[in-house]
Length: 292
Image (cartoon, rainbow, N blue to C red):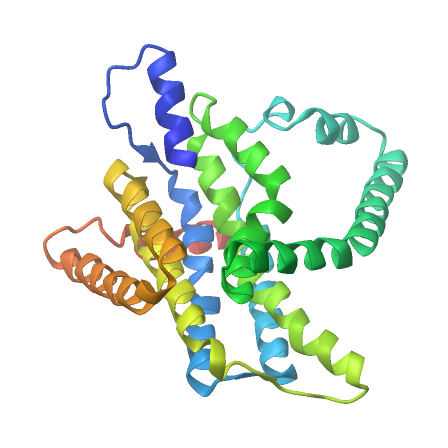
């Protein structure tokens, strides 16, 4: 979606590049590389087929480490308050005390809204999946995130169509993925254990195929962005594979194998494409620059 919006916006502005490339800045290596540890640990979770409170602790620690690294990154010189939307811009322009109260109020209002709507939302999703004849797990896995994160899609679409901000839109989604693979996943065994009144393990054996599919897709996304470019064939290829497994669930294992082969080819291509994994070389330089 981000690439398509970016390409259409380029065309409307009179751009002559037929297949425009979304380019990232080197400091985006933090987000790209930051997604790797959660994916690697989740591979272990998928292998053992369970998700417990110890896993939750590790995932929360990974997210905390990610935030620490982000905090070490120096701010960009050209960042401006005009880069944000109207509501956060108004909050940023407040005095410190009203700003803090506004942030707390927004979080509280959002939390209340989620609490009141989550059960009807889930029931509606399950009912809609049954009406369409689609696996409830698959439907919730792929469609629920799009619906629940629609505001995020709106903001990323706005950045994608703005001149020079498509990379920011991509990094917004990458950061969201870091959160989903760590904090949101960690909440599952914690909430499950709290509801039972004792530490409990969430079994994942029945959903290994779906989880592996999602894991391979995320890993491929990391490698595709590791050269700080996102090209048309990469965007359209990812979408085609997602649409294929969603439309024909029986092909899911074949799509997972395709993801794996594509991933291996991209990693192997680093031997003749030196910039393929550049983010992993830039990442330590960014940290050392901050330390200086």
